[in-house]
Amino acid sequence: MQNKPILPIILGPTASGKTALATAIAYKLQYEIISADSRQVYKGMTIGTGKDLSEYTVQGVQIPYHLIDIVDAGYMYNLFEFSQDFARAYTDILQRNKQALVCGGTGLYVESIIKQYTMVKVPEDADFRAACELRSFEDLKQEFLQYKTPHNVTDFDTKKRLIRAI
Image 1: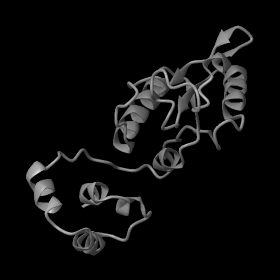
Image 2: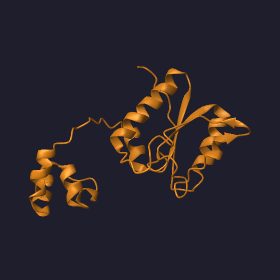
Image 3: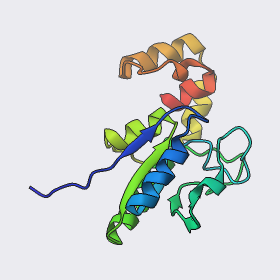
Image 4: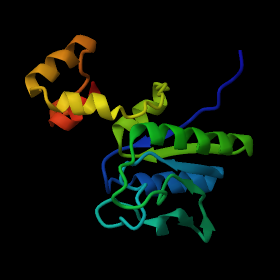
């Protein structure tokens, strides 16, 4: 059996000191950091996201980081894209014989790493969505519940989200 590399993860809420801890560890052990934060992916969104890029310099050494400032603000980045971007960054780090450390506050992103979610790209079906728009919210909800038990209630926040989930 092949030994899998250990992947340390630092998880917690915004402004709880995750980055300071991660960069201190990365500096000492020469790790690279992969962000698992759903807001830090956005370029320019520094206020309110806890994205303090100055923390990635420790004693004059720039700590390599990934998945920060990778998409424009307003872009609808999602879990599928995170999974793809994470896999590319992690593979790149391992191929260079380096060690990764995950740091972030988005629980679903971290869960997708730990549980190794397998995700496939599903193309949008405009005709299906248009037909669903003509149906009632309750009818759509009943159809959704025939397919799966929801793991959260966000699929029922709006009709648009419910149609997307179906």
